Image (cartoon, rainbow, N blue to C red; front, top):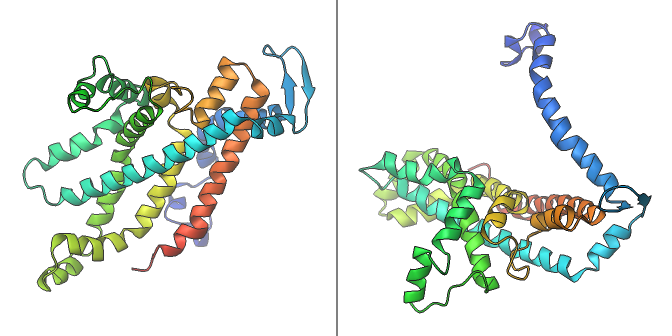
Length: 302
């Protein structure tokens, strides 16, 4: 590390190996305690059968996996997760794209506009879930009352469709700000000369956006689509728990919430661990499929 030929921009700050190693120790410790050890524990538990208190444990092979894949409730949870993730991904990307495109059109109050959009990022997911649950509560929620006056029989406590719409809205609202930051940075990075040349040729703002801005945002959109899938699979537990608790009748019981209910409510540790392993494999498969098929349409050279 001390040789001049090996010194990069970051290595130039460290004269000895000891300091960067010490700086990495806290992060490695966190990864060890909260990722590697739980992952290894879940992987081993997936092949075991144990009583709710862990007093008797026996090797079960693939029994947890076969019973899980034969379960109708688990297949329903997979379907719910795919629908939820696709809807949340599409709504989040579309809303953030419109908001980022509109940022350049606002003359007054631009700082306030961006602050309102970025505000959900500072709110805890469970608080966001409680907020949306109150707004659309069929008894006291102000937005639910507006829907009732419009003749819409809104009731997420009884209707699975209404419950799914509500959790998609809550999860998308919480994640729009993340997408907005990247899309706004991508739009600002587009060479102004291209847009000015198109404007001189008579192209309207929307035409300039769809013919110049949107193709140049391809890599950013692809990255955000992958991140939104990861968010939909792993990071919506608090919102689901605060809004619907997986109901009604399992209509919003996504995979990550089912792992919790089976493991910590029903105390079926083997099934819960097997679900964790399958969920990880499923998320990796979806990500690889996106890189395999969606990335072909992304142009990084523009």
